[in-house]
Length: 301
Image 1 (cartoon, rainbow, N blue to C red):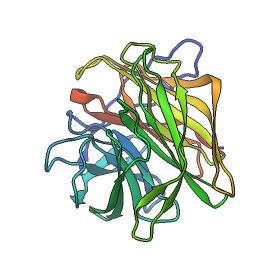
Image 2 (cartoon, one colour):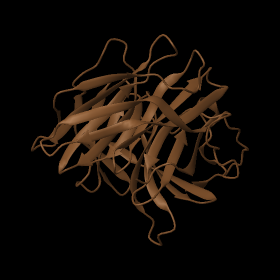
Image 3 (tube, helix red, strand yellow):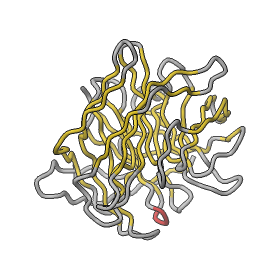
Image 4 (cartoon, rainbow, N blue to C red):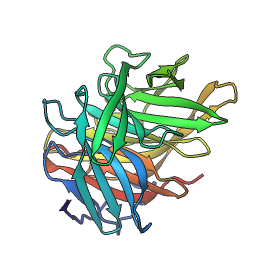
């Protein structure tokens, strides 16, 4: 494992909750191929003091790394590569654990291909892959979440949007699986969404999604001025999702989303609520500057 650390002071947007300036970001990659595009909780470390998470990378070339395991503690992080076995994706942007299926995950590419994976130690094996059920013209995806309520599953994903001219589109659909493992999506609903921060012309209104046990939708938003920045990000409480016992999915977005924290200097592309905790793990893809992770307290109920 390579062990890397970094400490950076953080600024906050006036009128928003502080971004815990005394908490440092931990560096987990030092170049454009090592940024964190998505995170999925895997489990606690053996001693219970840290967590293991899977991180996807948005690499596009054959043989480049697609997936890593990050072991996260307060003050330090370890990262180890995971071997990809099966059809290679291009531009992985999000990953989510499948409830009730230990070691299995869905990972999404920027163009909307969903890969079902089985992760066993240092190897991830492709079980199946399929396109999303609805892909709009010009859609570019960076986010994916699975909601489990009332014995049913639903999937959320979003076109990231681009500045004032293109709000994000948040999609939702019931989720089931074929006997051979293929993800199956029900009727799709959609909602437009514009992030309150950042406000740059390059803003991606939704760069990732996480959902709390009660159905609160947390989203990250980010602006990207180029491979060397400057970057800017926020995490917001965006709305709620419910899944009925009949499998019906309903999304309600707030008229005025609550900005929970702002993160100048970083491009957040991963938001992951950790189970049985208020802890929220954030990950960045800062292009040539690499990738960073840190914990904040935005989740819980």
